[in-house]
Length: 252
Image (cartoon, rainbow, N blue to C red):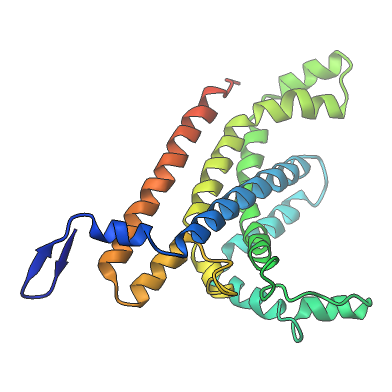
């Protein structure tokens, strides 16, 4: 709220906030941030729950498969972004070369304005679904076996176990995944900056990448105002959602 140098300062009130909110690219960044957060959150919940359910069955290799699913989360986000940026190159990338081998012409994954954001979302889900899976596994493993045994005595099968016991009693784990994945998506920056730098044009710009551009241009007061606005947006979405989700939880 001040404009300052080493020897002087001036109170400017909310000028930085007003300037940041009048950014021409902010509407695109806000829309992309919501799309990015909702899609990454939804896909992590769906795939994490399905993988968690599968990896709680009596398959012999479940310990190895759990390690495989969690492994991408151990990698550096920057390294993942660089690797997938290279693999998604339109002419030299591994993905399009593999598609060309079976007669399919691959698109420009990161250069196409309709595909770029979805391509980064895919990479984010691939990297983050391991954490969601681990949370779901912990939630499913905590369900008392007596519930399943009682259902079997009543003639219930595998589908009834999943639908009437596993799914409703996994709500606490599901709520944790929703909150963590949604907040992570709203403040995401490093992966999308590594892969697209907000391009092509402004089509993959998020609020966090707009803030970074202000920092890089030397507008520190403006970018700090952007961080405060991003914190308020995350709080406005996350706190009511957390209260709504926890109200519907059931005790085991």
